[in-house]
Image 1 (cartoon, rainbow, N blue to C red):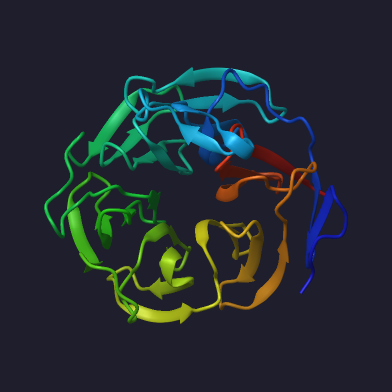
Image 2: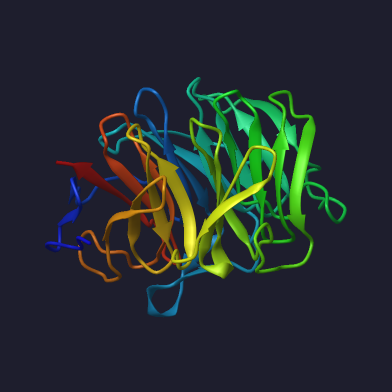
Length: 307
């Protein structure tokens, strides 16, 4: 297993990165919960703007503006291009961009999954804005929404209940699995914090409080579990069918899709390239560069260029 090699260069197997210090022309302040890039490598970050820097450098919510967020858009060099969503986002949580550049956002504050075009025009809303779903039904503080290769929408519904859902591309509910209460058995969850679907329609769920990944069929049938993924927050599968997992423990786990670890990189700290917060979102652009969003700190969005 390969770990950090220097303060600004990192490596996990053949994956080598250099931290891009000073990346990001940020238009304001806030806590960045997730990040994704489109086909032009424009960078989209969902930001909780109702935060301020607290004691010890930790980000904390402002009492009068707990529900407040927006999307920031940058070019790949970090120049700010646009901001939008201020009237639609409450507590931004998960972000994912599909091959046609449609943006899927999960809001843990208003219980919705929303679909936008790259300019920020709202195209679809799943869930009832401002009202949690009934027990067993979408949504109660969802965490992430992604597409399968066939265009179905998969959602991890993790803070208020312990379920995952599958929708048609038109937003019709097709399947739910899990339970209302937390559990540790296969097929049960304790905070499903992320969901990802590979090209073979295997579904990977980061079962965060159980420190594992569970793998399912698209019918919600349990296949296997990896029980050594502590504090998993977000994941992305690259073009080589390798999964990169951001953990709240301050590192990135790199694995093949059969569960074999290639390497681990990253560490907590205040030096360039280290994580002062907890890695909460991760994305890989068309050139293999990695973006990591951190919660627990303000303006925690870093870029690592593939070398």
